[in-house]
Amino acid sequence: MKLSLKASQRLWTFAFLVVPLSVYFVVVIGPLLATAWLSLTSYTFSAFAPPEFAGLVNYERLTGDDYFHTSLKNTLIWMVAALILPTGGGLILALLLHGRVRGANVFKSLFYLPITISMIVIAQTWQWMYQPDWGLLNTLLKTIGVEKWKVFWLSTRGLALGAIIFAWSWQQVGLSMVIFLAGLTSLPGEMLEAAQIDGANYRQSLRRIVIPLLLPSSVVVIALAVINSLRSFDLVWVLNEGGSGSSTLAVQMYRETFKSLRAGYGSAVSMVLFAIAVIIIVFYFRRVRRLEHLYD
Amino acid sequence: MTELARAGVTVTERERAQSWSRRALHVALIALVVVYSVPTFGVLLSSVQRDREISRHGLWRIPDEITLENYERALGGTNVPNYLLNSVVVTVTATAVSIAFGVLTGYVFSRLAFRGSEILYLIVVAGLFFPPQIVIIPLQQLFSHTPINDTILVLIVVHVAFGLPITTMLLRNFFSTIPAALREAAIIDGANEGQILLRVMVPLMLPALAVLATLQFTWIWNDFLWPFILIKNDAARTIMAGIVLLKGPYDKAWGLQGALSVIASLPTLLIFLFFQRYFIRGLTFGAVKG
Image (cartoon, rainbow over the protein chains, first blue to last red):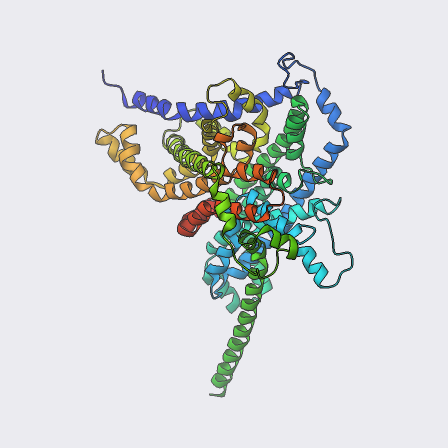
């Protein structure tokens, strides 16, 4: 029997999708729904007490949990810092390196090399900077004669989170730079020259031509920065395990679940994380769609 | 005549001013990149010094003597070579499978759209934004009921699933750039969709596959969260989880930690050096178009 073209295409479509989508739904979507359910239970991994519906108990407890308040606040601080440090820094680097700078490619490579390195190694790298006895920062403070040079960067409240975010930004700046640079290469060189002939100075051409053209890349950079800041776990965990007021939602989720074995409560923290991610997804897709209309 | 001369003078003056500002920019950039590279340099420095040297004199100075002892120690035992081997197997397999899956799904979402396929596509791509933490508990429970629990197969499955959003998205966009006439001609010649994909499309997309391979290899190699949470058995541990584990018993073994960091970073650094072009194209994909 010969299948019609349409029927044959349907069959192939099914054959192509069935395995990849099954894996995706079993490993990602299913567990996501299961986490939502667990967040409504008081599950503790006990074999004798399977998860039972407990309503919004966990979420109520979240509202009164100081550690959660700190984690949420830190995650939001992290997101705001992500918009300033790596995003702004990447923009400046891209603008500096976009022109005909000698050796621009070498500079670019050195700035985005850290993106290819694991957060675990980045954490190691920054321990050599923050180590109290002989870390670079304290060595410098000692050398210039600061009396109280022994600063405990990673175990002082108020310093720890900033120190970790700084190390994170150091890695992420290359990513923003690369994306902004790609946006800039789409900028026709003649456009800038024409503007200059018309007497526009650097600041004017920046404001009227470069910045508007970088808008689509900015959306991507910002979305990436914010999403990556939601995931921040590895670096915090290795540098100080979320102590000294540097915990984030991702870290608290791990602590509640695997240290305190409160799987239900940890799931509620996860769902807060997920809610923030959803807000960003919605904002991102709407924004991207509007931009597409703009440039069509 | 004087007009022209004046014009000539202003041009050279402007050029001179420009070349000065350009030189200043150059010097500033060199200074910036040197400061930026200091942390990386510290790891290299620690990896070639003895621990007692570091605890006596500190790390940040020219070492009296350069030693490869830390590297010998790192690679000497059985743990680290085994962690590295696990990382290679997991990374290579998961990279290959996730890209193969992406080829299939990307092709369907681009060329074989059906009712509801747009929503299905959005569900897949939304996975790009999910923090992996939100599925950890159920996944761990799920795997504990399977025979592959606590083996590297678990890691491969997870990385394949979490790789699907990016591979699907990039490959769908790529398929959309291939002229529809190519596929129609093949259909007229009597080819089925499987043959079109393998014989017509795949040969055209080798650069796109290279882009994805560099990206996926880097993410998967560098991952820490999954082996940290899903693997308890030391024989199935990967290098990034291994480094963190080894930090415990060797708290003051700074040189060893430095050497381990360098060793663990070599594969992705080599990829970066040789396939930089592809890597960057992957990172910036969609950045221009949105």
